[in-house]
Image (cartoon, rainbow, N blue to C red):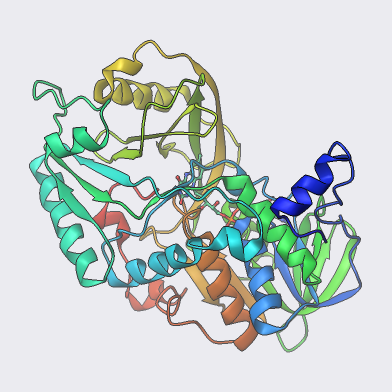
Length: 417
Ligand SMILES: Cc1cc2nc3c(=O)[nH]c(=O)nc-3n(C[C@H](O)[C@H](O)[C@H](O)COP(=O)(O)OP(=O)(O)OC[C@H]3O[C@@H](n4cnc5c(N)ncnc54)[C@H](O)[C@@H]3O)c2cc1C
């Protein structure tokens, strides 16, 4: 496989860029693998890459019912940050942030990781107290996060309106400078290409219809649209459809699947230099490299598997954005879409072993799992390879819903992107 470099770019320029090799072959499944990963989103592909690279397990298949990166990985608004309240979350998301640094070099693929800063606006006394608590907790965990006055917030993001007469005036903001965005599908493509290079098979358009178990209860493989494929280890990383896949193995998960929407405006010249989030009015915004304003909100109110959502939520979100940024009042919106997000009762992920021997799960990332992609894949690969958790994912067990050791980021922050 060609290494991307200035030299290979120049060499291919002479042939009009017609001779670039295929980035990853579309494989037919083999009868058996050492490990099968269900779901070729960023998490599943990253898991396969780290299995091959760090644990020497290369006889791996990543199977997807659609095309790779066609799930939430290709539908999200790409906010990356690690300023979560609880020690467990800060550790896991910061592990991911460490891997984001240098990911483009690691994969030899430009994932366009941009540390432009994520600013979270405080509109009420409750917000101010909560964000300051987050900042202190983050500092104790070595996670950067700083308090800004309204004037400092405006200096960092000039189009912000800090008019004190607003319905939700800005009383200050928490800023994580190391946070930012990345190009979502480049992350999936980069991991896919790098994993393929190490021998991983990526099988697309092949729904997994059931997980099979032997008489001793252990996993024996998966049933797919192209027949049975054997494997002693199966890792399910199917986001909003995880509960459906896991049910076929007899494992019930505390998950609800909701549509989550996003939308983009017509492209304009660079206007927003960072990501701005507002939990109180439930809207957030950044600008893509194409110039579109990328806008997102909270989940729809109802559970559903349709990849679209209700218009009232979009209207509410756009109204909130216009109040924070009055200069966007006359912008036209270009398109909207939805993804199905998997939400746990405490809004934290489930990442680890299951009661079934050989079956592992990575889910419950809800509205905020893109930022975790390298960390989730890395710790899932560790858990699958060694049959024990990595220190970063050890608290994110399924058992916490029976023992009560919840990691309640839902109560800590109203929004979790
Ligand atoms: C609109 C929106 C905005 C978001 N914004 C952010 C954000 O700003 N920041 C952030 O951190 N996170 C965000 N998220 C959440 C984030 O996108 C997800 O948490 C993350 O991408 C999950 O990655 P994944 O690889 O686990 O899932 P996916 O990318 O969804 O991959 C799962 C794959 O499993 C496949 N699959 C499902 N069922 C089967 C089956 N039976 N057989 C085979 N394959 C199957 C699917 O086709 C899919 O490709 C957002 C999500 C949405 C929808």
